[in-house]
Length: 223
Image (cartoon, one colour):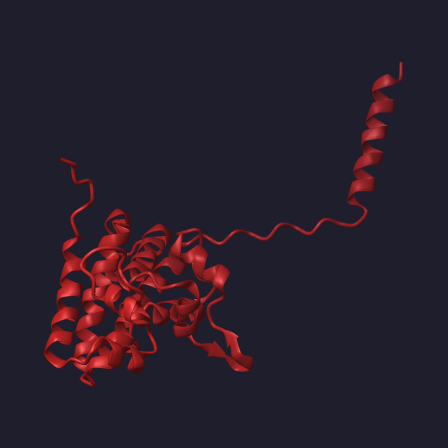
């Protein structure tokens, strides 16, 4: 008799699979028809609704649901379950100990809160995050990929408030919910000490210092 070593399916993954399976059972259609409607293979669709294995891609979940029903509430419910499954799969959110925006006190708090916002959004690929953050004139991204990565990894804050809000938009935070985030940004900016500028060195300073050193050396050798 062989011992079973497979991990039990995660509860949130099972909840997502149960929702998708029930939706398909109630509304149909056949797998071949659903494949035609979504442009996804039958095997991909079946993996999307599977109880075990990696959490499916967000866009596959959306395509699966929209291929079955036009009810937007079904998509909303599916994405809510998908985000929970992704959070559980990654396991990073609980390690951040991130405060709510209203309780952010300093840059470290804000970095943790920003990383948590990304995790709560299901940790989308960086290019998806960038696309959702929008573009400025000339199709220039509001959120460069390098900056996005550094924010997610708590290496640095956004360069300015515009990039900050673009990041939050990319994480799915709607405009009407940005007020506490703006207050948090302003608090951190008001308490973060600014680094004084380094005095500009005169172009002849190194030469002058060299001459002074030579003079002192000769003076020390004089009887």
